[in-house]
Image (cartoon, rainbow, N blue to C red; front, side, top):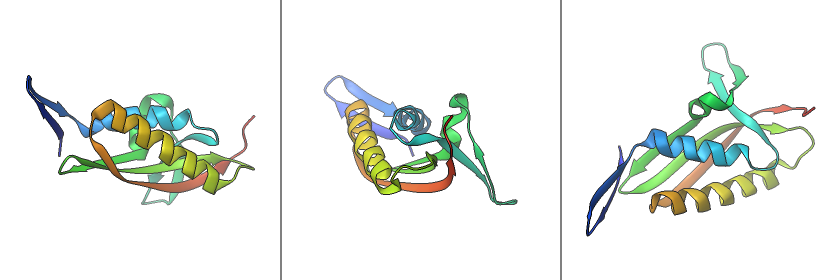
Length: 118
C-alpha cells in the first residue's frame, strides 16, 4: 500500500520502494552496519548486497499512513549489536519521518551475519 499525505494544495503519494531506498541509504551510514543482507530461504544462505540493490534487504509496509520497516542487516565484527540496533532505529525513524511526514510505527532488525571490516 502506498503512503498518502493530503494538504491544501493536493495529495502526495509515496511508494514503499522509495521509503525502502531512503531507509537503506540511511542505514548503511550508521556505525556498525556493514550492509543489507539478502536471505535465500531455499538454501539458507545470506548474501551481502551492493549499494545499488539495498532495497532487497528491506521490507516496508504502510497501513493507515503508519510505516513498518524490516531490516535484514550484516553487522561489523566486534561491535555491540544492541548499540548498533538502537542507533539504527533512532537514525532511520528520525530521517524517514522527516522525509515522508508519516509516522514510523515499528522497525524490526534481523541480524543475518557478522563480517570483519578491512
